[in-house]
Structure formats: C-alpha cells, structure tokens
Amino acid sequence: MEYRQLSPETVPGFLKDIPSVQQIFSDLDDLEVEEVGDGNLNFVYKVRQRKNPEQTVVIKQAVPFLRIVGESWPLSRTRMNFEIQALEHHTKYCPQHVPDIFYSSTDMSLVVMQNLNRHAVLRGEMILGKIFPKLAEHISSFLANTLFPTTDWCLTGGEKKAMVDRFINPELCKITEDFVLTNPYEDHETNVYHDEVTQADKDYLQQDSQLKVAVAEMKYAFMNHSEALLHGDLHIGSIMANEEETYVIDPEFAFFGPIGFDVGAFIGNLFLAYYAHEVRQKMLGREPFEYRNWILRTAEETWNQFQAKFEVNWVAHEQDAPSSYWNYQEGHIGFALQRQRFLRHIFEDTIGFAACKMMRRIYGLAKVADIAEIPDLKARLEVERNVMRMAKVMVQQRSSFRSIKELTALAQEISPLR
Ligand code: SR1
Ligand code: MG
Image (cartoon, rainbow, N blue to C red; front, side, top):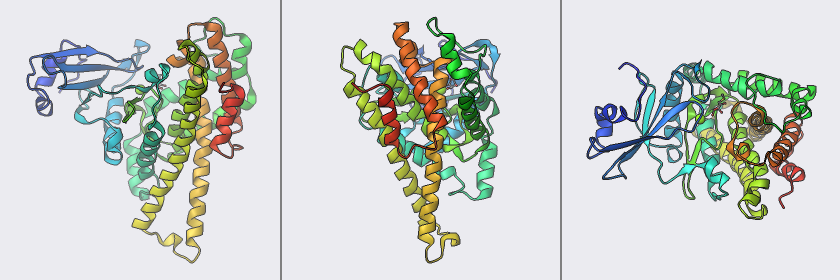
C-alpha cells in the first residue's frame, strides 16, 4: 500500500477495506470523522458511526514532518513503526493499561485503535483539578511490568541485543537529545520565552556550570545506557484516564534507554502540575492544599510502588529460572543487595531526568498547558521560577536524596502546600 496522508474526508473510504475494522461497524457508510490531534507530532481522527456512536475507533497517523513546526521540519514516518512495535510489547506485558489495537500499517504509518471515549487526556483533567485515586497504582504497574522484561536481568544477552537493534530510533531520540537535554540550557533559536522572562532568569539555567555539567551527564546517560525498552515520552499528555482506569498511549519515542527516564518523565510532570496548581487552584476558586497534597502523594506512591513491583518481578523471574550465579549459601543476600543497588541507581536517574523534563517545559519549544496557559504572566513566571529552583537542586544533588519523601519535602519547601 502506498502512503497517503488521510483527511476526515478520506478516512471512511480507507477503513472500509480493513477486515478487522469491518467487524466493529455495522454500517461503514455512516461514519462521522473528526480530527482531534493536539500533540506535537501526529494527526488523530475520531471515527464514530452516526446512528450507533458506541461503534467507534481512533486512527493515529504519522505525517512526514513535525506537526508543531509544520512541513518545514521534516521528520520521517518511521516513528510509527516504533510505536507499533512498542504497543505490541506493552500489550503483551501490561494489556490492562494499553488501548486495544485493531489494525496497524507501517506503509500508511498508522494505527487503528480503541477510542478511549470514557477517558480523557490526563493533563487536561489535571488542569481542571480532577483527582485520580488509582493513578499511582496503575502507572507504577505499567512501568514495572513493561520495563523489567526487557532488562538484561531478564533477557539473555542475545535476546536483549536483538531487541535493542529493532528499537534503534535515532530521529526521535534526537528530538529528546535536543529539546529536552540541550537547547533549553543554551540561548537556542528554538527556545520560546514569554515577555516577563528576564536575562537573569535565562542565565539561571543557561550560565550555571554546575547545572550544565549535571544535565550533560543526564544526556550522556540517555544516549548510552540501554537498560530497557522505554516508552520514551511518558508525560501526562501520554496518559488517558478516568477514576477507574488508566491507559498509556503514544509510545513513538520507544527505544532502549535508562529506566529512570520513563519514571522521571511521569514524576517530573507531577511536579510541574504541583507548581502550576499553586495558581490554578486559586483560579478554580479552591484552596490549593488538597489537590497539591494529592499530587505529591501520587509522586511518592508511584515511586514506592514501582520500586516494590519491579523487585517482585525480578524475584519472580529468579524463582522461575534460578541462576547458578546466586547459588551459594549467602546467595540470597547477594541477590538482595544487587536489587537494592540497582533500584538506588534508578532512583537517582529518576530524579535527574525528572528535573530535565521539568526544565525543558519552561524555555524549550514544547511547553505544557498546565503552566503555559496561566493567563497572568507574572503569576506564570513565579511558577516557572519555582520549577527551576527545584529542578536545579534535583539534577545537581540527585545522588544525595535518600527517599522520595525528601524530594516531595523539597517541593513543599519551595512552594508550601497551603
Ligand atoms: C519539538 S519537541 C516535541 C515534543 O513532543 C513530544 O511529546 C515530546 O515530548 C517531544 O519532546
Ligand atoms: Mg506524544
């Protein structure tokens, strides 16, 4: 099949020929299509049958450019090949948090999947101040269950290297290397500053040698530490949820990288929301305490539960296939120490990457609506300064935090819950 970019007008004709989609709709001549993509890269269509709107799918199609910039920024469609492969992996290891996939095509660079129409993008919901009681439980399961099976603790060296090879994703890794781990920390042409940002604000990030060394270390880790198959872009816009269920979408940035990058992406986005809600809760006419407290508890529970579940998976794997390596009298002590040290390493990376994910959203090209859509620029600037204060300590002192509680305590020291 030859690639063509779909439009709302051409979607119905395209779907008609796909057997797995024919089973979903009782009448393929009665489809209503709406383009709903609000991400930075792709086009997303919601398709419903007019007379039976519960018969519905979503199509996500990659176009050969970066949507946030336009056709002047070419980006190959192969990103969808990685998304399709990653969705298969996520479905295998954590189906309860992945949408059903009905059809995929690397030729057309698209997937047809479950329309999560009882769920909404988490970022938008959190901006509205909604609480998701099961979020930490679900995301910690997704992380532990998708990451552990692709580590060298689980796979053989040969299996792991074959997978690393299938997930060499240089174009999207370069987006992260540039937009998350380089450009915001220099006076780069792709950065975007609002009118209240001062030279001193920029210098705080762009002329601090200690900070720049620490960020460069995180970038080196991102580029070299092929620990597990990552989602690669696990911010709260890549999650759809309601109070009961949570789905992780959009794994086109998937590649083998440092585990802390995925964990840190999620936790860093919670901290961004925490600072935004110092202002947003007041905009909503509420006292900030309850919601911001929920955000910090969610960050703590995510880390604590992730750590516990990752370890459970590791122990279960060792029990299923005991290695002769730990087969000596005190082997269980050695094995426990190994787990403890590895999780400590992930914790430090989580803090360092969370910090980078926070800082890139302030001066970098791609912002987060939580903060960027605060209408009062002076209030927005104060939020941004708090983010920068916290992120700087995090990345520079990432090895000195003893627990996730110390991290949430830092968040409150910079901006009390109130
Ligand atoms: C140009 S940067 C685009 C961003 O959008 C994606 O969601 C990733 O976060 C990426 O960094
Ligand atoms: Mg995305």
